Amino acid sequence: MTGRIFPLDGWRGLAISAVLVGHFFPVPGINLGTLGVELFFVLSGRLMADILFVKKLPLGEFFYRRVTRILPALLVFVAAFWIVAEMLGEPFSLSPLWVVAAGTFTLNYLAVFAHHPGWFDHLWSLCVEEHAYMLLGLIAYLFGRSSGRPVVVVWVLGAAAMLNGVFSFLVLHMEYDDVYWRSDVHVASIFLSGGIYLALRQSINAETVKRFATPVFLAALTGGVLFSLEAAPLPLNYTLGTLCFCVAVALCDIAAKPIVAALSWPGLTQVGLWSYSLYLWQQPFYKAYGLYPEWKLAMLAGAIAMGIASYYFVERPARRWLNSLWGRWGRKVAAST
Image (cartoon, rainbow, N blue to C red):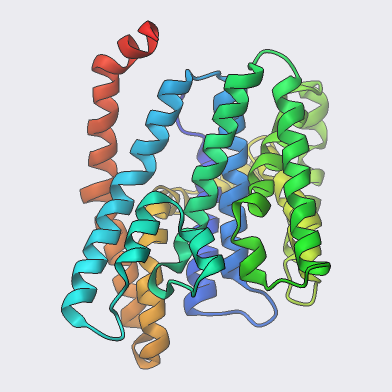
């Protein structure tokens, strides 16, 4: 695996910052929480396309590293919150059904067909990501990774998912959560981001892309934000807005030096490293803030403290230990299969 790309860590920092500001200091006219989640999705699309179709990481290692990245911190978060919630009782109690759904990445569909899980409702986005990873891995397995066929499949499925969302919202008149929490709709953000990244960075002359990277990046980022305004119709948000963010994240590390430097600012990249654990832990504190609004700053501080603690005491050590196991025996297993 190659080293860090600092502008991408900075993009993660922007994404989680948008979520935190949107939840604790909402800005009129734009839902920064949903915008932040979309920034996470398009980043995942770029990264997964690079790992699977450019670096061609072995599929066994790809899935193993996805598990070590996501599962340990998630399971600790779910178990810790459930234990505390059982001790405190209402309004914090949570059905065991939602605990199982969170750990099995089925929560987003359970939420569509049942009532919302409340304290865990942000985990719908993890379900979408995990389903996208499984589908991308399956595409790589079935169609190979050395020709244009898998990329065409990624484009087709991404476009179909995006159109599915438009149809569900405009024709079937379904509610936002019942449309855009579903993986069969929201994998579009991940798939199309991956497809755009491969098209821009692998299929076009590198010097040509770099020459126009800065103005295209700025226009795309601006367009993504504008289409994310609450005044914009929701289907535009998740079509044109998403596509704009896909282009922006594909170019963010080769744009002009001031842009790269801003995204590589150490404070922002550090927040980006914490972003997954911060995302997990901010939600219960955000929900509790809704119950006790006078404690807003305390709830925000608690969310940040628990997220950072999760990173240093759970996410990072678990990931390092589990990945070290792959270094010992995983490659031998992969080679023998």
